[in-house]
Length: 193
Image (cartoon, rainbow, N blue to C red; front, top):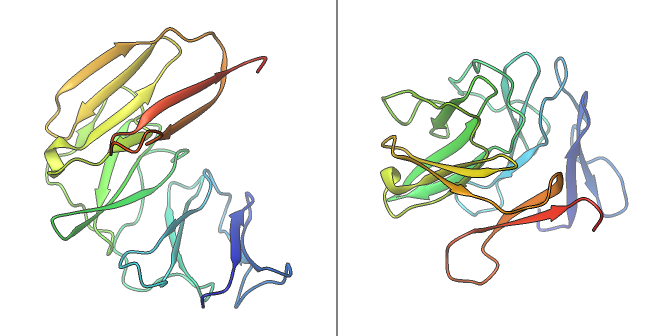
């Protein structure tokens, strides 16, 4: 509605507040069971028609509209394991991709109706939590981070790894395009800083 609002979730509720701290529409939404990740905000067509996606400990992915109600017509039912990372959305060649992975290491690529976007299941040897959109879907790279390495995987199952030289333990990771070249970089913040 072109007003400043904030959305966040606890384990049991999804909140949408206006600038004065008042609940918007039918919020807070009571999450069935408990949330396993933080809410992701999607605007598929960049027209301020927001969807709020949050995963639950019952291996479900909720899709809540800005009215505070579940979105009708979604076909996706359950994940194989817990989703702890972010749910991402990107568009390649006019097609939506909703990307996330779970702790069984399955990688999900869905369209906005919740249908699998790729035919071949990708089950990796680790949980991939970050992605870099490619020009083609098969050149999109997924990333997983351990204290010793950054692992990469393309959607045509080409795997690689890069050694890291970070102090353990790191407290925080940022994965953003810091220098404006269109490629995301990892920034690690170690303990004590």
